[in-house]
View 1 (cartoon, rainbow, N blue to C red):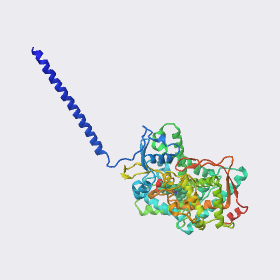
View 2 (cartoon, rainbow, N blue to C red):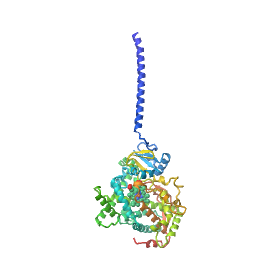
View 3 (tube, helix red, strand yellow):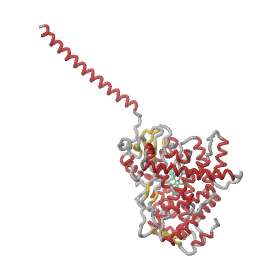
View 4 (cartoon, rainbow, N blue to C red):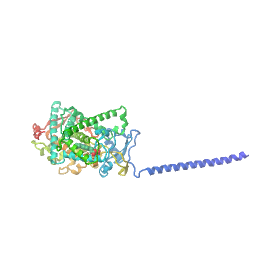
Length: 530
Ligand code: HEM
């Protein structure tokens, strides 16, 4: 009986106990979930991170970049926002497009002026490069010196401009002669290597006081591997976002080994020049940019607390020589390619130059204001090709925010210059090559529009060779159209395709060059002797 009584009591108790347990468990779960949410909400910054596409494990969005990352970024900007983020390997990269570029680089300049600690950057100038190094007090001081020294040897004043013009002219003569000879011998030839050596020679004359023969093997070795360099340091370079790829045999490792070797050889070339200059240096005589840097940086060291325990001149010279010859020779390749692609524009350029410069002399700096179509052509080449589509990668120097999105310190930042130059709300038919867009109704150069082209970046990292480059490209274009006629090989019609890297390099193309008149060479040689 007792047992019979007890059993129902126990059943009720355990039922009650079970229900209480379940309730308690549920309550605990709710409290836990609530706490978790609260904790996440409290941890969440008051402003969100930029949106962006879903990333794969390990590789992130690397496989989506394709052969033209700037175009992928422009598509993603349309889908998400001008500020969006992707993952490359394990790195978060924020990509800036359109209007927010000026906001970041100019208005919030110091926040966005760093450089990431990418593996490849540590091999440029033995890890002491100013261009690839992050922002420090030494960087600021060095950049100031570099900027004024570049001006001192190019656009600083009327006299320095003339000296620079003379270097360009001397090299142009050699190049023209070579082009004509190559055409006589081969009918059609590829101009790329000659344009690289020619540009490197101008900068070598300015930097080291010496030019080289086109057959000089050592010089060609040193300057002839620009594509290997720019493919490795360009935004989206695989080794920088997946550095583990360098530790076992694979194609990326081979590319990276070549990159390291070329940097070692390049640094040695520049270091030898500085050693030679220091040995023969005479106080009070500045022979070239190397001497100028020796004086300026030695003074800076003596005046300040900077003590680097090494020679600080080779890295800065390496930056100037390296940055200038690759970019300018790429620009010249595009100019020639476009001249043969659009022969009617070549004719129009010739007509404009002929009106201002007769056959007795060559175009000069003083003619620039009267040659608006030449300048419009150069700006359109820069806009249309955007041949440095993304700047050297930046990084944030502090926790910051832009356009309502939060960006932590040390985030990698890609700046998509292409997105500005091809923005349809700014440029009518941006995919059409049309220099006329830069001329107003009176045929004058529209300065507001030319300043909207973005190729030399902005703010604290803005290129220090912008003025020199524009002068060089003006002289080169004016000389070319004044002196010769360039045609494409009809069997291999020119295309505007390119290989992606820090600079976009056109695919190889074939041209023939003829002098416009038999006495063209004479007017070229009448200028001051080289
Ligand atoms: C058409 C020719 C050129 C173009 C389009 C060009 C463009 C650029 C760009 C986009 C950058 C990266 C800026 C950034 O990261 O935000 C840069 C940096 C730089 N450029 Fe140029 N450049 C040209 C020619 C030159 C020349 C001729 C020199 C030297 C005389 C030069 C020296 C430098 C240096 C030293 C830097 C690094 C600046 C820094 O990190 O603070 N560039 N250039």
